[in-house]
Length: 235
Image (cartoon, rainbow, N blue to C red; front, side):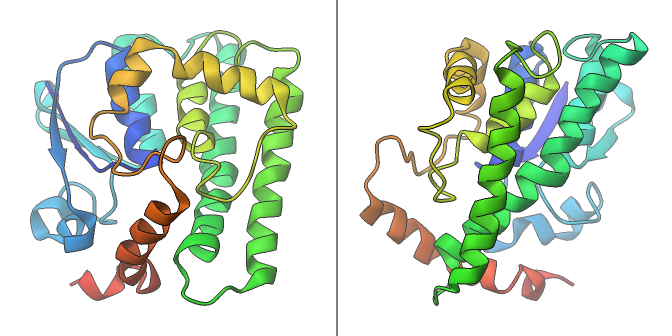
């Protein structure tokens, strides 16, 4: 049994989607980030960095894994699925996983901060992070022109990148001019395991349906935590 400590964020949904795809039994431990539950001593014992997601494998002596990419690799290796064992095929998956961890996630995360959360609009910062996010989307689109998935068969690389790219509207970046990326987004969205993973836990905001007014309300509620960098909830 896997205990998943998480919240409704792209990084959190990466791991819940993987657990659903791999059909691994798990318990859901949802942390309220606004209350600083990710900074409690109990959770810091699992992840010293105080961020979600993290997992604890009860079948392996309560072995804890933190960092979303590390969680994905651990689960894939545990089951022998979604990550090839052949050296070159494995490397391709890991390369695209690192593309998300080092590029897509950080750039979209900063776009979110400056576009959605900061009380003042610092346009050069918004332009910088939205522009870099769009550049990375173009990289994905160009690669997907000749590939159904990012690294051969569907893998943890697709899960990791998809969980972030699907939230492009929250970052203020459109993908209407990227047809191959759109095709990939919709194909993965249609997977039943992906749909289940997105409900573990469900997001309180769905940009495909909700209004910008609701998005503004959500941003205002989250603003204080983001501005402080969560540092004031640290020990």
